[in-house]
Length: 144
Image (tube, rainbow, N blue to C red; front, side, top):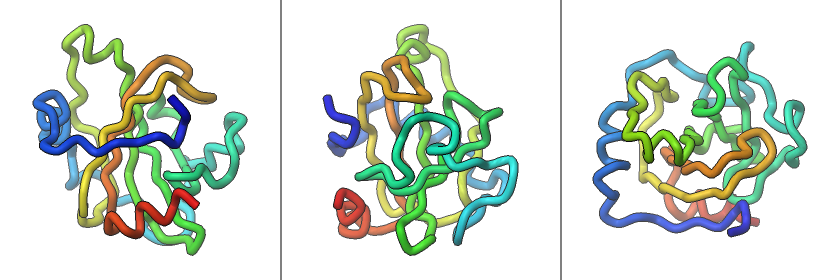
């Protein structure tokens, strides 16, 4: 499956619902405009990915939080568009959870859960759990 292939699960599967319920949306405030402060780094400076990943935007991550993240995704205009978690499939197969993940203090418009077979930076199969802070239309515009 290509990196930018996506589908929206409606309704969200039980596993994703449980995961989302465990997210700490009251966690550390993360930047909502421009690029986030250290220890966040541009993902394209860490692994061979483009600066702008079609369908996601410009990604930043604190390397100490890998593989889960959060990855903060910004549009070309410098505004935060989503918070992305990359959760290894093996974690779900072992029935493990992810509790206490931090997220940007921004309203969540909608959520996508996308399977990915692996890519530079997170090579093992995983799910992208994308908390979109923008409308579906604005998120779709990131594909171009």
